[in-house]
Length: 515
Figure 1 (cartoon, rainbow, N blue to C red):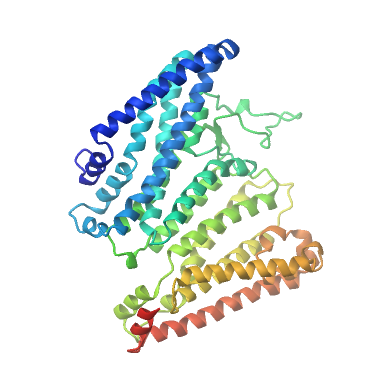
Figure 2 (cartoon, helix red, strand yellow):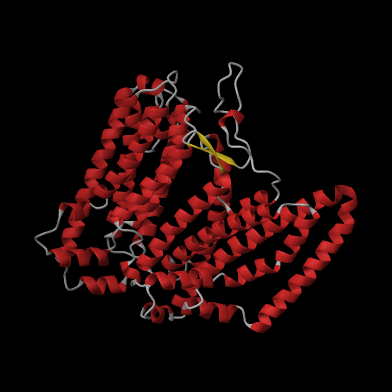
């Protein structure tokens, strides 16, 4: 970093001597006033130790807000403002490698936020001393804070790279929403995953720990028969990896570091490319990312909960992941034209004519099979379980994803302004209207008519169980076949659009320029 021109440029721009000294003086005054005042106001009521721990927790929460949220916004602005000022093209043609440019922006854009957190260090040390806290927990909290914040910065920088004019505010809101979800999603899924929070805000919990919890199996809760109760909550700051208890701290750092690597891979692939040629990951890399995410989920999943609910939770997470990865693999008209020019009009492969169905089918099938294998291997023998029924639910998820992604790909190849946005809008309107109409007729309340909802909505993921399947198997199966028919029709429509692109008319460029 000390020889990276992009990092040095950001440091000189954001940490000018006058600005740095002013920030340091203001921070020192605020720390002195806050520390001295709180010491005399609350020490008599809570005691020095309790006051010190409360202050330590609050300081790390504030630092996480500054470094994660503030640094994330700075990273969102990093590339977007360069594009808005027409200076980013000069950076793309420099001799810096894509990785050097990405690292320079990753650590340079939020450098002022790092400096602000550094200004809080004296008060953190004071709170740790007053609370008689071991500095090993303070250092561990800073490790969690920095690694988690770097992950937020890398994701924000990737969003900034993909942001176009007019969507800057949306990008900032997306980062803040993602940070909120990142901080709360593992609380929501704690029923199904033996995995704690991966958020930088977890540093406030590490900072006030007094001892490292035990990871021996004998410390698990036991039932009255003396067996291990896997449904009981884990001790704080611990996870369970394939049934073995581990400290949450190393798990958090390792998982966050791996996700940072995936974000850097996408940045290095695209940061020096023309915006029309952006491709976050290659198909093979996208497949690897989907497998990696599912491996992490299956490593910490609680299969001892209700099987139907666990499978539905895992499928829901996969829907979000595979939808995002599928959107990244969609091809626009310019990219399809380059492919056609490379292959020739008479050598268009069937993969290009049906894209992204082949890729998404293989990727989603691998992810769903991992879930099926994990459920089969670790299931409770007393649980209600049918392999054929479970496979049907998995295949329904796959065909539903293929249908929507194939529709969006067809929209991307059609003439128009912002076709992807319009495609997502059409899908949203369709699902909203279908849900309103079906709900108004009480279809969801009638078990005999509920299978008909599968023609319009992905209800089998959540509402299909053994009782519903036995009641109307023919209707569920017909809805499944109908989705494949829709996929085939969309592929046929996309094929016609691609053949039109292979034989462009002279008026087409003028029409697209006008649009």
